[in-house]
Image 1 (tube, helix red, strand yellow):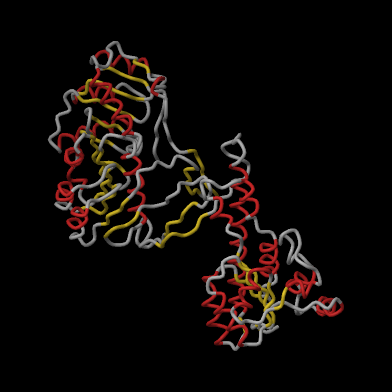
Image 2 (cartoon, one colour):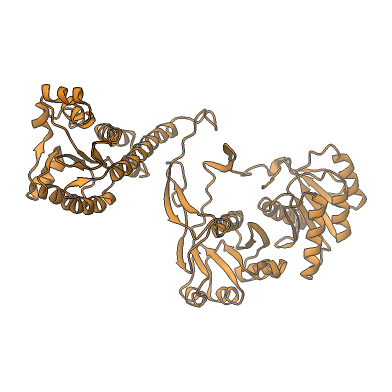
Length: 521
C-alpha cells in the first residue's frame, strides 16, 4: 500500500468551528465529498460549501435530540474497513458502504462545562460526547488508511500538506494525528471519570488506579541542569487549583529550578496572614520574617543570611510597594513573586533586565497529590498540611514557655516545615536567625544553624529552636542551649525522649512536643 492516502470522502462533525471553513474549502477544491451532521452541516451549507447529510448515507434520521446520529454501520464500516483487505472491501460493496478517508471531529466541551462553579449534574451529563469519541477511535485505529483531526490547531498543518501533495496525506502525518487522537480521547474520558468520582464521597485517598491528566503550559529553559529538558504542565483534574501559575510581568524565561524555588517560597509565605518575606535558595529558605511592615519583614529576612540570599527567590504574601522595590533592586535576585506590584515597583524592578517578576494570587492548593518519580514508578502522598493540630501540642519540660516563646515556637514550626531535612532552625518571634538544612545528622544541622547566625552577626540569646523531627540524642539540645536558645519545639517520639527532656530541664529550656513530623526530602 502506498504511503500516501488520497482523501476522497471526509466526515465532519465539530462543536468548535474555528478555522473549519478554510479546511473545508481546500477539501472541496480537491473534490472531496463532505459528510456532516446537524449544526456543522448547516454551518458549511450557509457558507456555500456542498455537504451530504449523514442521514442521507445511513437512511436513518437523527434521533433522541441528536444523541444518535453517527452510530451506524454505514459510518463506522466506512471508517474501519481495511483498504488492503479484499474481503472487507467486498463487504463494503455488498452493503453499499463508501469508504471514509478523513474524520474531522472535536468534542463537546465537557472540561470547560464542569469547570464552571455553577454547573449542574444534568448539564455535565449532556456534555458527555458519545458519537464523537467513537468516530475518533475508529479512525485512529485505522490510521493506515484514515486521517483523523481532533484539534482545530491541526488544520493549518493538514491544509499545507493537502496542497503540497495534491489532496493526499502521508502515513507519518496520519500516525501522528492518530496518536494525538488517542491522547485526546484518553484525556476526555479521564475528565469525565474524575468528575463523576469527585461527586461521590471519597472513601479511599488512594484508589487502586489513579489516572492523572496534564496539559503543557510552557517549555522551560532547561531542567535542574542545562543538559536536561523540562516543561511545565498543568493538572487538568476538576479538583486541581484554578490557577497553575502566576502571571509573569517581566524578566527572562523561567527555568525548572526557578519554579521549584517559587513553589517552596510561596508555600512558606502563605503559611502567614501577617506580612511575610521569604528568601529561598536551592529550594531551601535562607531567610524568613514577618512584620506588620512588609519592608521590615524583608530586611529582617535578608539579614538572616545575606550571602545565601544572593541569586535567590523572594516571595512576599502582600503587594510590593515602591519603597520595597528599591530594596529588592539593590541586590541580585532571580525572581520576586508577590500577589501584586505597584506601578512604581514594576517600573523600578523592570530596570533589572533578567529579574523575573511573578504576580501570584496567594491561594494554597492542598488538594491532589505530591508526586515523585522513582525507578519503575511513582511515589504519591497527600499534601503536607497541619490544620487544627495545635491543641495536641504538649509542654514536656519543667518550665512552661512564656507568651513570647509560644509566639516564636509557632513561627518557627511553620518555617521548619519548608526546610530540607534534617532541619534545625533558630528563630525569634518574627524572624529566622540561623538555618541548618539537609544534613545527615541533626546535630550537624544545629551546628550549621549556629555558624550561619554567627556569620550574620545574629545573637542567639533568647532564641527558640525548631526541629522538623525528634532529637535522637541530647547533643542537639546541648548545642542549642550553648548557643543561647531558651526553648525548643519538636515532634517528639524518640526512644530517648526522656534523655532529651532531661537535657532541656538541665538547661532550663522550655520544650514543646507537637506530635507531628515534617520531613522534607
